[in-house]
Image 1: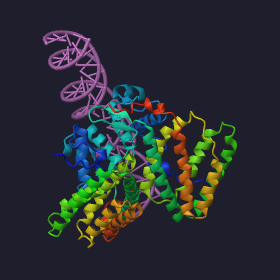
Image 2: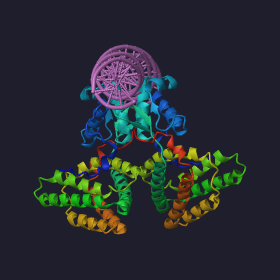
Image 3: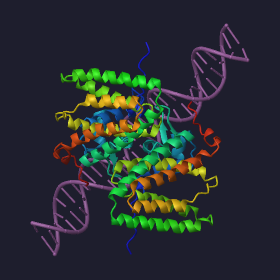
Length: 243
Length: 243
DNA sequence: TTGTGCAAAAATCTCGAGAAAAAGTATTGA
DNA sequence: TCAATACTTTTTCTCGAGATTTTTGCACAA
Protein backbone atom coordinates (compact mmCIF):
# COMPACT_ATOMS: atom_id res chain seq x y z
CA UNK A 1 0.00 0.00 0.00
CA UNK A 2 1.23 3.55 -0.64
CA UNK A 3 2.62 5.20 2.40
CA UNK A 4 1.05 8.48 3.47
CA UNK A 5 3.65 10.82 2.07
CA UNK A 6 2.86 13.69 4.36
CA UNK A 7 5.28 16.44 3.56
CA UNK A 8 7.46 17.02 6.57
CA UNK A 9 7.62 20.71 7.18
CA UNK A 10 9.20 21.51 10.50
CA UNK A 11 11.97 18.99 9.94
CA UNK A 12 12.55 20.08 6.39
CA UNK A 13 16.03 21.27 7.28
CA UNK A 14 17.14 17.98 8.77
CA UNK A 15 16.00 15.37 6.30
CA UNK A 16 18.57 12.82 7.45
CA UNK A 17 16.83 10.34 9.73
CA UNK A 18 20.05 8.56 10.65
CA UNK A 19 23.25 10.44 11.35
CA UNK A 20 26.17 9.26 9.24
CA UNK A 21 28.95 11.25 10.80
CA UNK A 22 29.94 11.50 14.43
CA UNK A 23 29.40 15.22 14.28
CA UNK A 24 25.75 14.75 13.39
CA UNK A 25 25.38 12.11 16.05
CA UNK A 26 26.82 14.35 18.73
CA UNK A 27 24.73 17.22 17.39
CA UNK A 28 21.53 15.24 17.76
CA UNK A 29 22.35 13.93 21.20
CA UNK A 30 23.26 17.38 22.41
CA UNK A 31 20.14 18.93 20.94
CA UNK A 32 17.94 16.30 22.54
CA UNK A 33 19.60 16.78 25.92
CA UNK A 34 19.15 20.53 25.69
CA UNK A 35 15.53 20.36 24.59
CA UNK A 36 14.64 17.79 27.21
CA UNK A 37 16.27 19.83 29.91
CA UNK A 38 19.11 17.50 30.89
CA UNK A 39 21.42 20.35 30.03
CA UNK A 40 19.87 23.30 31.80
CA UNK A 41 19.55 26.78 30.32
CA UNK A 42 22.56 28.95 31.01
CA UNK A 43 24.69 25.94 31.90
CA UNK A 44 28.28 26.03 30.83
CA UNK A 45 29.24 23.43 28.24
CA UNK A 46 32.75 22.25 29.02
CA UNK A 47 34.23 20.45 26.07
CA UNK A 48 36.56 18.33 28.20
CA UNK A 49 33.70 16.92 30.21
CA UNK A 50 31.23 16.52 27.35
CA UNK A 51 33.56 14.76 24.93
CA UNK A 52 33.96 12.12 27.60
CA UNK A 53 30.21 11.71 27.99
CA UNK A 54 29.35 11.58 24.29
CA UNK A 55 32.37 9.51 23.32
CA UNK A 56 33.78 11.80 20.63
CA UNK A 57 36.89 13.90 20.23
CA UNK A 58 37.23 17.50 21.29
CA UNK A 59 37.18 18.90 17.79
CA UNK A 60 34.15 16.86 16.87
CA UNK A 61 32.16 18.02 19.86
CA UNK A 62 33.25 21.56 19.14
CA UNK A 63 31.85 21.33 15.64
CA UNK A 64 28.57 19.93 16.93
CA UNK A 65 28.29 22.87 19.29
CA UNK A 66 28.87 25.24 16.39
CA UNK A 67 25.96 23.65 14.58
CA UNK A 68 23.76 24.16 17.62
CA UNK A 69 24.53 27.85 17.50
CA UNK A 70 22.64 27.84 14.22
CA UNK A 71 19.52 26.66 16.03
CA UNK A 72 20.12 29.25 18.76
CA UNK A 73 20.07 26.49 21.33
CA UNK A 74 23.69 27.24 22.24
CA UNK A 75 25.41 30.60 22.51
CA UNK A 76 29.10 31.15 21.92
CA UNK A 77 30.88 33.68 24.10
CA UNK A 78 33.95 34.64 22.19
CA UNK A 79 36.83 33.03 24.01
CA UNK A 80 34.80 31.96 27.03
CA UNK A 81 33.39 28.76 25.62
CA UNK A 82 29.83 27.69 24.97
CA UNK A 83 26.66 27.89 27.07
CA UNK A 84 23.15 26.55 26.75
CA UNK A 85 20.90 29.35 25.52
CA UNK A 86 19.02 30.93 28.43
CA UNK A 87 15.25 30.79 28.81
CA UNK A 88 12.79 33.43 29.94
CA UNK A 89 9.11 34.17 29.75
CA UNK A 90 9.79 37.17 27.52
CA UNK A 91 11.74 34.94 25.16
CA UNK A 92 8.90 32.46 24.96
CA UNK A 93 6.42 35.22 24.23
CA UNK A 94 8.68 36.47 21.48
CA UNK A 95 9.05 32.98 20.04
CA UNK A 96 5.32 32.34 20.12
CA UNK A 97 4.33 35.66 18.60
CA UNK A 98 6.88 35.35 15.83
CA UNK A 99 5.82 31.78 15.20
CA UNK A 100 2.21 32.89 15.06
CA UNK A 101 2.95 35.51 12.45
CA UNK A 102 5.01 33.17 10.28
CA UNK A 103 2.55 30.32 10.59
CA UNK A 104 -0.41 32.52 9.66
CA UNK A 105 1.42 33.74 6.60
CA UNK A 106 2.38 30.20 5.66
CA UNK A 107 -1.22 29.12 6.08
CA UNK A 108 -2.40 31.88 3.78
CA UNK A 109 0.06 30.80 1.11
CA UNK A 110 -0.93 27.18 1.62
CA UNK A 111 -4.59 28.05 1.16
CA UNK A 112 -3.78 30.02 -1.96
CA UNK A 113 -1.63 27.36 -3.58
CA UNK A 114 -2.67 23.99 -2.13
CA UNK A 115 -3.93 21.40 -4.59
CA UNK A 116 -6.23 18.41 -4.27
CA UNK A 117 -3.52 16.13 -2.91
CA UNK A 118 -2.82 18.63 -0.16
CA UNK A 119 -6.51 18.74 0.75
CA UNK A 120 -6.47 14.97 1.00
CA UNK A 121 -3.41 14.97 3.23
CA UNK A 122 -5.03 17.60 5.41
CA UNK A 123 -8.25 15.64 5.85
CA UNK A 124 -6.26 12.51 6.64
CA UNK A 125 -4.19 14.31 9.26
CA UNK A 126 -7.32 15.76 10.81
CA UNK A 127 -8.93 12.35 10.95
CA UNK A 128 -5.94 10.82 12.70
CA UNK A 129 -5.87 13.71 15.13
CA UNK A 130 -9.56 13.27 15.87
CA UNK A 131 -9.05 9.60 16.65
CA UNK A 132 -6.26 10.49 19.03
CA UNK A 133 -8.42 13.12 20.67
CA UNK A 134 -11.04 10.51 21.48
CA UNK A 135 -8.49 8.49 23.39
CA UNK A 136 -6.98 11.58 24.98
CA UNK A 137 -9.33 11.47 27.96
CA UNK A 138 -7.60 8.30 29.07
CA UNK A 139 -4.50 10.36 29.69
CA UNK A 140 -2.21 7.67 28.40
CA UNK A 141 -2.20 8.51 24.72
CA UNK A 142 -0.85 11.98 25.26
CA UNK A 143 2.34 11.52 23.26
CA UNK A 144 0.39 10.05 20.38
CA UNK A 145 -1.87 13.10 20.37
CA UNK A 146 1.10 15.49 20.57
CA UNK A 147 2.66 13.88 17.52
CA UNK A 148 -0.53 13.91 15.46
CA UNK A 149 -1.22 17.48 16.50
CA UNK A 150 2.22 18.42 15.26
CA UNK A 151 1.63 16.64 11.97
CA UNK A 152 -1.73 18.34 11.51
CA UNK A 153 -0.14 21.74 11.87
CA UNK A 154 2.65 20.66 9.54
CA UNK A 155 0.25 19.62 6.81
CA UNK A 156 -1.70 22.84 7.19
CA UNK A 157 1.25 24.84 5.89
CA UNK A 158 2.75 22.11 3.71
CA UNK A 159 1.62 23.78 0.50
CA UNK A 160 3.44 26.99 1.35
CA UNK A 161 6.29 27.27 -1.15
CA UNK A 162 8.54 29.49 0.96
CA UNK A 163 11.58 27.59 2.13
CA UNK A 164 12.67 30.47 4.35
CA UNK A 165 9.41 30.64 6.27
CA UNK A 166 9.60 26.91 6.86
CA UNK A 167 13.22 27.19 7.89
CA UNK A 168 12.44 29.85 10.47
CA UNK A 169 9.42 27.91 11.70
CA UNK A 170 11.65 24.90 12.13
CA UNK A 171 14.00 26.87 14.36
CA UNK A 172 11.15 28.33 16.38
CA UNK A 173 9.51 24.95 16.75
CA UNK A 174 12.61 23.44 18.31
CA UNK A 175 12.92 26.46 20.56
CA UNK A 176 9.32 26.20 21.69
CA UNK A 177 9.83 22.53 22.39
CA UNK A 178 12.00 23.44 25.36
CA UNK A 179 9.24 25.55 26.86
CA UNK A 180 6.57 23.00 26.06
CA UNK A 181 8.32 20.57 28.36
CA UNK A 182 7.95 23.00 31.23
CA UNK A 183 4.21 23.28 30.77
CA UNK A 184 3.90 19.50 30.86
CA UNK A 185 4.25 19.60 34.61
CA UNK A 186 1.08 21.66 34.74
CA UNK A 187 -2.36 20.39 33.96
CA UNK A 188 -3.50 21.53 30.55
CA UNK A 189 -5.96 24.37 30.35
CA UNK A 190 -9.42 22.94 29.61
CA UNK A 191 -10.11 24.12 26.11
CA UNK A 192 -12.00 22.59 23.32
CA UNK A 193 -9.14 21.87 20.99
CA UNK A 194 -11.22 19.58 18.83
CA UNK A 195 -13.67 22.31 17.90
CA UNK A 196 -10.77 24.67 17.21
CA UNK A 197 -9.13 22.17 14.90
CA UNK A 198 -12.42 21.43 13.17
CA UNK A 199 -13.08 25.12 12.58
CA UNK A 200 -9.54 25.50 11.30
CA UNK A 201 -9.98 22.62 8.87
CA UNK A 202 -13.34 23.95 7.69
CA UNK A 203 -12.07 27.46 7.04
CA UNK A 204 -8.98 26.13 5.29
CA UNK A 205 -10.88 23.82 2.96
CA UNK A 206 -13.27 26.68 2.23
CA UNK A 207 -10.17 28.67 1.20
CA UNK A 208 -11.14 31.40 3.63
CA UNK A 209 -7.64 32.64 4.43
CA UNK A 210 -8.68 35.46 6.74
CA UNK A 211 -10.83 33.30 8.94
CA UNK A 212 -8.36 30.43 8.98
CA UNK A 213 -5.57 32.78 10.02
CA UNK A 214 -7.75 34.28 12.72
CA UNK A 215 -8.56 30.86 14.14
CA UNK A 216 -4.93 29.84 14.04
CA UNK A 217 -3.96 33.05 15.80
CA UNK A 218 -6.43 32.33 18.59
CA UNK A 219 -5.24 28.76 18.71
CA UNK A 220 -1.60 29.66 19.22
CA UNK A 221 -2.52 32.61 21.41
CA UNK A 222 -4.05 30.25 23.93
CA UNK A 223 -0.73 28.47 24.21
CA UNK A 224 0.79 31.80 25.12
CA UNK A 225 -1.78 32.38 27.84
CA UNK A 226 -1.16 28.91 29.20
CA UNK A 227 2.54 29.59 29.56
CA UNK A 228 1.91 32.93 31.23
CA UNK A 229 0.23 31.12 34.10
CA UNK A 230 3.47 29.38 34.94
CA UNK A 231 5.16 30.69 38.06
CA UNK A 232 8.06 32.99 37.40
CA UNK A 233 10.33 30.67 39.37
CA UNK A 234 10.42 28.37 36.38
CA UNK A 235 12.65 30.83 34.60
CA UNK A 236 14.45 32.31 37.58
CA UNK A 237 16.89 29.46 38.21
CA UNK A 238 17.98 29.24 34.65
CA UNK A 239 20.88 31.59 34.83
CA UNK A 240 19.10 34.04 32.57
CA UNK A 241 20.74 36.83 34.49
CA UNK A 242 23.71 37.78 32.40
CA UNK A 243 26.92 37.61 34.28
CA UNK B 1 29.50 65.06 22.83
CA UNK B 2 27.07 62.16 22.97
CA UNK B 3 27.46 59.80 20.08
CA UNK B 4 24.35 59.00 18.08
CA UNK B 5 23.53 55.68 19.68
CA UNK B 6 21.54 54.34 16.79
CA UNK B 7 20.52 50.87 17.74
CA UNK B 8 22.13 48.53 15.29
CA UNK B 9 19.51 46.07 14.17
CA UNK B 10 20.69 43.95 11.33
CA UNK B 11 24.05 43.39 12.95
CA UNK B 12 22.61 42.72 16.37
CA UNK B 13 23.77 39.13 16.23
CA UNK B 14 27.38 39.96 15.51
CA UNK B 15 28.26 42.69 17.98
CA UNK B 16 31.97 41.88 17.96
CA UNK B 17 33.72 44.38 15.68
CA UNK B 18 37.07 42.67 15.95
CA UNK B 19 37.49 38.90 15.92
CA UNK B 20 39.44 37.52 18.84
CA UNK B 21 39.72 33.90 17.80
CA UNK B 22 41.02 32.47 14.56
CA UNK B 23 37.67 30.80 14.03
CA UNK B 24 35.90 34.13 13.96
CA UNK B 25 38.54 35.58 11.71
CA UNK B 26 38.21 32.75 9.21
CA UNK B 27 34.42 32.99 9.51
CA UNK B 28 34.42 36.65 8.60
CA UNK B 29 36.83 36.25 5.71
CA UNK B 30 34.85 33.36 4.32
CA UNK B 31 31.56 35.19 4.67
CA UNK B 32 32.92 38.26 2.94
CA UNK B 33 34.31 36.18 0.08
CA UNK B 34 30.99 34.41 -0.36
CA UNK B 35 28.90 37.57 -0.24
CA UNK B 36 31.19 39.42 -2.60
CA UNK B 37 31.15 36.55 -5.03
CA UNK B 38 34.77 35.48 -4.89
CA UNK B 39 33.50 32.07 -3.85
CA UNK B 40 30.78 31.37 -6.37
CA UNK B 41 27.42 29.82 -5.52
CA UNK B 42 27.45 26.05 -5.68
CA UNK B 43 31.24 25.95 -5.55
CA UNK B 44 32.79 23.16 -3.57
CA UNK B 45 34.69 24.24 -0.50
CA UNK B 46 37.72 21.99 -0.15
CA UNK B 47 39.15 22.23 3.32
CA UNK B 48 42.65 21.24 2.21
CA UNK B 49 42.83 24.09 -0.26
CA UNK B 50 41.08 26.71 1.85
CA UNK B 51 43.08 26.20 5.03
CA UNK B 52 46.13 27.01 2.95
CA UNK B 53 44.57 30.21 1.64
CA UNK B 54 43.24 31.51 4.96
CA UNK B 55 46.25 30.39 6.99
CA UNK B 56 44.44 28.32 9.62
CA UNK B 57 44.27 24.65 10.52
CA UNK B 58 41.82 22.18 9.09
CA UNK B 59 39.71 21.91 12.24
CA UNK B 60 39.55 25.67 12.58
CA UNK B 61 38.36 26.19 9.04
CA UNK B 62 35.89 23.38 9.51
CA UNK B 63 34.39 25.12 12.50
CA UNK B 64 34.13 28.40 10.62
CA UNK B 65 32.25 26.60 7.87
CA UNK B 66 29.88 25.18 10.47
CA UNK B 67 29.14 28.71 11.63
CA UNK B 68 28.37 29.74 8.08
CA UNK B 69 25.79 27.00 7.88
CA UNK B 70 23.91 28.98 10.51
CA UNK B 71 23.69 31.92 8.11
CA UNK B 72 22.64 29.56 5.32
CA UNK B 73 25.54 30.84 3.24
CA UNK B 74 27.09 27.36 3.23
CA UNK B 75 25.36 24.02 2.95
CA UNK B 76 26.73 20.82 4.46
CA UNK B 77 26.19 17.64 2.49
CA UNK B 78 26.53 14.87 5.04
CA UNK B 79 29.83 13.22 4.28
CA UNK B 80 30.41 15.02 1.01
CA UNK B 81 31.89 18.19 2.37
CA UNK B 82 30.70 21.78 2.19
CA UNK B 83 29.45 23.91 -0.69
CA UNK B 84 28.58 27.56 -1.12
CA UNK B 85 24.80 27.90 -0.91
CA UNK B 86 23.30 28.12 -4.42
CA UNK B 87 21.49 31.16 -5.74
CA UNK B 88 18.38 31.41 -7.85
CA UNK B 89 15.73 33.93 -8.76
CA UNK B 90 13.14 31.92 -6.86
CA UNK B 91 15.33 32.01 -3.77
CA UNK B 92 15.71 35.76 -4.02
CA UNK B 93 11.97 36.21 -4.37
CA UNK B 94 11.47 34.04 -1.32
CA UNK B 95 14.06 36.01 0.65
CA UNK B 96 12.56 39.34 -0.35
CA UNK B 97 8.96 38.37 0.35
CA UNK B 98 9.83 36.91 3.74
CA UNK B 99 11.92 39.94 4.56
CA UNK B 100 9.05 42.19 3.54
CA UNK B 101 6.65 40.40 5.85
CA UNK B 102 9.03 40.46 8.81
CA UNK B 103 10.04 44.06 8.26
CA UNK B 104 6.42 45.22 8.00
CA UNK B 105 5.60 43.47 11.25
CA UNK B 106 8.68 44.93 12.91
CA UNK B 107 7.69 48.37 11.69
CA UNK B 108 4.21 47.97 13.16
CA UNK B 109 5.67 47.04 16.51
CA UNK B 110 8.13 49.89 16.28
CA UNK B 111 5.32 52.34 15.60
CA UNK B 112 3.34 50.95 18.50
CA UNK B 113 6.16 51.06 21.02
CA UNK B 114 8.64 53.68 19.84
CA UNK B 115 9.32 56.57 22.21
CA UNK B 116 10.52 60.11 21.70
CA UNK B 117 14.16 59.14 21.51
CA UNK B 118 13.35 56.72 18.72
CA UNK B 119 11.51 59.45 16.82
CA UNK B 120 14.57 61.61 17.17
CA UNK B 121 16.87 58.89 15.87
CA UNK B 122 14.53 58.33 12.98
CA UNK B 123 14.45 61.96 11.94
CA UNK B 124 18.22 62.14 12.23
CA UNK B 125 18.65 59.08 10.04
CA UNK B 126 16.24 60.49 7.49
CA UNK B 127 18.08 63.77 7.41
CA UNK B 128 21.40 62.06 6.81
CA UNK B 129 19.84 59.98 4.07
CA UNK B 130 18.39 63.06 2.40
CA UNK B 131 21.78 64.73 2.37
CA UNK B 132 23.27 61.67 0.74
CA UNK B 133 20.47 61.61 -1.81
CA UNK B 134 21.32 65.12 -2.90
CA UNK B 135 24.85 64.04 -3.72
CA UNK B 136 23.68 60.81 -5.29
CA UNK B 137 23.32 62.35 -8.73
CA UNK B 138 27.07 62.76 -8.84
CA UNK B 139 27.35 58.98 -8.90
CA UNK B 140 30.34 58.93 -6.64
CA UNK B 141 28.62 58.83 -3.25
CA UNK B 142 26.74 55.62 -3.92
CA UNK B 143 28.30 53.65 -1.09
CA UNK B 144 27.59 56.45 1.33
CA UNK B 145 23.94 56.42 0.27
CA UNK B 146 23.74 52.64 0.55
CA UNK B 147 25.04 52.77 4.10
CA UNK B 148 22.70 55.57 5.18
CA UNK B 149 19.79 53.87 3.49
CA UNK B 150 20.56 50.72 5.48
CA UNK B 151 20.74 52.69 8.70
CA UNK B 152 17.44 54.44 7.96
CA UNK B 153 15.72 51.10 7.57
CA UNK B 154 17.44 49.84 10.69
CA UNK B 155 16.21 52.73 12.78
CA UNK B 156 12.70 52.33 11.41
CA UNK B 157 12.37 48.99 13.16
CA UNK B 158 14.74 49.71 16.04
CA UNK B 159 11.88 50.06 18.55
CA UNK B 160 10.59 46.59 17.76
CA UNK B 161 11.25 44.49 20.88
CA UNK B 162 11.31 41.12 19.17
CA UNK B 163 14.80 39.67 19.16
CA UNK B 164 13.73 36.81 16.92
CA UNK B 165 12.33 39.01 14.18
CA UNK B 166 15.54 40.99 14.20
CA UNK B 167 17.60 37.81 14.17
CA UNK B 168 15.77 36.49 11.12
CA UNK B 169 16.00 39.87 9.40
CA UNK B 170 19.73 39.80 10.03
CA UNK B 171 20.04 36.46 8.27
CA UNK B 172 17.89 37.59 5.35
CA UNK B 173 19.81 40.83 5.04
CA UNK B 174 23.11 39.03 4.60
CA UNK B 175 21.49 36.68 2.13
CA UNK B 176 20.06 39.56 0.11
CA UNK B 177 23.46 41.20 0.09
CA UNK B 178 24.68 38.52 -2.30
CA UNK B 179 21.93 39.29 -4.74
CA UNK B 180 22.29 43.03 -4.34
CA UNK B 181 25.79 42.75 -5.72
CA UNK B 182 24.41 41.24 -8.89
CA UNK B 183 22.04 44.11 -9.48
CA UNK B 184 24.87 46.58 -9.09
CA UNK B 185 26.01 45.76 -12.59
CA UNK B 186 22.72 47.05 -13.89
CA UNK B 187 21.66 50.64 -13.91
CA UNK B 188 19.23 51.39 -11.12
CA UNK B 189 15.58 51.69 -12.00
CA UNK B 190 14.60 55.35 -12.06
CA UNK B 191 12.35 55.66 -9.07
CA UNK B 192 11.77 58.47 -6.69
CA UNK B 193 13.26 56.95 -3.59
CA UNK B 194 13.32 60.23 -1.78
CA UNK B 195 9.56 60.65 -1.94
CA UNK B 196 9.10 57.07 -0.84
CA UNK B 197 11.31 57.57 2.15
CA UNK B 198 9.64 60.83 3.01
CA UNK B 199 6.19 59.25 2.87
CA UNK B 200 7.46 56.39 4.98
CA UNK B 201 8.81 58.79 7.58
CA UNK B 202 5.61 60.82 7.59
CA UNK B 203 3.34 57.82 8.06
CA UNK B 204 5.59 56.40 10.76
CA UNK B 205 5.75 59.58 12.78
CA UNK B 206 1.97 59.89 12.41
CA UNK B 207 1.80 56.38 13.94
CA UNK B 208 -0.23 55.20 10.98
CA UNK B 209 0.95 51.59 11.00
CA UNK B 210 -1.21 50.42 8.11
CA UNK B 211 -0.07 53.11 5.73
CA UNK B 212 3.56 52.84 6.80
CA UNK B 213 3.52 49.10 6.24
CA UNK B 214 1.90 49.58 2.84
CA UNK B 215 4.55 52.06 1.77
CA UNK B 216 7.31 49.81 3.01
CA UNK B 217 5.79 46.89 1.13
CA UNK B 218 5.77 48.90 -2.09
CA UNK B 219 9.29 50.06 -1.36
CA UNK B 220 10.69 46.56 -1.01
CA UNK B 221 8.46 45.25 -3.77
CA UNK B 222 10.19 47.52 -6.24
CA UNK B 223 13.49 45.88 -5.36
CA UNK B 224 11.93 42.59 -6.27
CA UNK B 225 10.81 43.90 -9.62
CA UNK B 226 14.27 45.29 -10.27
CA UNK B 227 15.84 41.88 -9.73
CA UNK B 228 13.29 40.21 -11.96
CA UNK B 229 14.61 42.25 -14.85
CA UNK B 230 17.98 40.58 -14.54
CA UNK B 231 18.70 38.06 -17.26
CA UNK B 232 18.21 34.48 -16.19
CA UNK B 233 21.82 33.72 -17.10
CA UNK B 234 22.88 35.38 -13.86
CA UNK B 235 21.61 32.41 -11.95
CA UNK B 236 22.13 29.69 -14.53
CA UNK B 237 25.87 29.20 -14.05
CA UNK B 238 25.65 28.94 -10.30
CA UNK B 239 25.29 25.21 -10.03
CA UNK B 240 21.76 25.63 -8.75
CA UNK B 241 20.84 22.42 -10.48
CA UNK B 242 20.75 19.85 -7.76
CA UNK B 243 23.39 17.18 -8.21
C1' DT C 1 30.25 1.15 -28.25
C1' DT C 2 28.40 0.62 -23.72
C1' DG C 3 27.97 -1.09 -19.07
C1' DT C 4 30.16 -3.27 -14.97
C1' DG C 5 33.60 -4.03 -11.57
C1' DC C 6 37.92 -3.19 -9.32
C1' DA C 7 41.53 -0.28 -7.80
C1' DA C 8 43.99 3.96 -7.06
C1' DA C 9 43.59 8.59 -5.47
C1' DA C 10 41.57 12.40 -3.43
C1' DA C 11 38.91 14.34 0.05
C1' DT C 12 36.61 14.11 4.25
C1' DC C 13 36.22 13.00 8.92
C1' DT C 14 38.22 12.04 13.51
C1' DC C 15 41.43 12.06 17.30
C1' DG C 16 44.98 13.40 20.74
C1' DA C 17 48.63 16.68 22.20
C1' DG C 18 50.47 21.29 22.83
C1' DA C 19 49.93 26.56 23.32
C1' DA C 20 47.19 30.50 24.85
C1' DA C 21 43.81 32.51 27.68
C1' DA C 22 40.61 32.87 31.52
C1' DA C 23 39.18 31.74 36.16
C1' DG C 24 40.22 30.73 40.76
C1' DT C 25 43.29 30.90 44.88
C1' DA C 26 46.54 32.23 48.03
C1' DT C 27 49.52 35.71 49.75
C1' DT C 28 50.91 40.20 51.15
C1' DG C 29 50.24 44.81 52.54
C1' DA C 30 47.51 48.54 54.53
C1' DT D 1 39.08 42.98 57.72
C1' DC D 2 39.53 44.39 52.95
C1' DA D 3 41.85 45.09 48.56
C1' DA D 4 45.34 44.35 45.14
C1' DT D 5 48.70 41.32 43.03
C1' DA D 6 50.99 37.17 41.53
C1' DC D 7 50.63 32.40 40.91
C1' DT D 8 48.33 27.94 40.04
C1' DT D 9 44.82 25.40 37.87
C1' DT D 10 41.37 24.68 34.77
C1' DT D 11 39.48 25.37 30.25
C1' DT D 12 39.56 26.75 25.71
C1' DC D 13 41.67 27.07 21.31
C1' DT D 14 44.68 25.39 17.59
C1' DC D 15 47.35 22.22 14.79
C1' DG D 16 48.99 18.10 12.25
C1' DA D 17 48.61 12.99 11.36
C1' DG D 18 45.87 8.76 10.61
C1' DA D 19 41.43 6.12 9.43
C1' DT D 20 37.17 5.93 6.73
C1' DT D 21 34.46 7.23 2.87
C1' DT D 22 33.60 9.03 -1.71
C1' DT D 23 35.02 9.89 -6.27
C1' DT D 24 37.54 9.02 -10.37
C1' DG D 25 40.03 6.34 -13.81
C1' DC D 26 40.79 2.19 -16.28
C1' DA D 27 40.43 -2.40 -17.80
C1' DC D 28 37.42 -6.03 -19.34
C1' DA D 29 33.38 -8.28 -21.12
C1' DA D 30 28.96 -8.26 -23.74
